[in-house]
Length: 123
Image 1 (tube, rainbow, N blue to C red):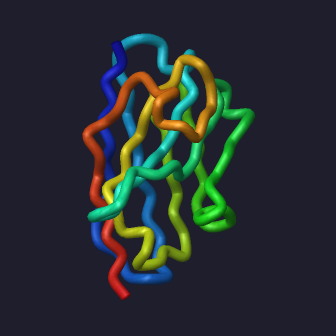
Image 2 (tube, rainbow, N blue to C red):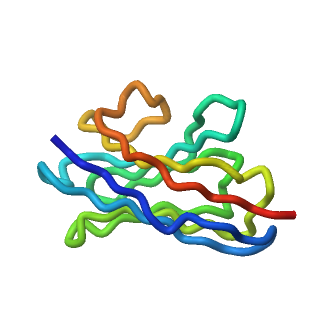
């Protein structure tokens, strides 16, 4: 069992930056690939970024590539999402998730989910 708790969400102006975190507890954090997903009002949840268990492989959705960066610190059992040049369309609830099978863009591959943190970007 893995428990995930996101933090760091908030309100930011367009063009600004925000970093959100996801702290994990339970089974060995470093055994899991980690992902970030987001869900905007009235829309389906979508993949944002993923990182391998070692941190050596990262993957970002085209919509955030060059603006967002996923990273992890296995010593701190934490995964991060640094978000730069934010746009109003980035407004969503952001969820972190853990996958034992490896990095994936498909949410069905993820075993554990956090409760989400709200990110709002004003224009």
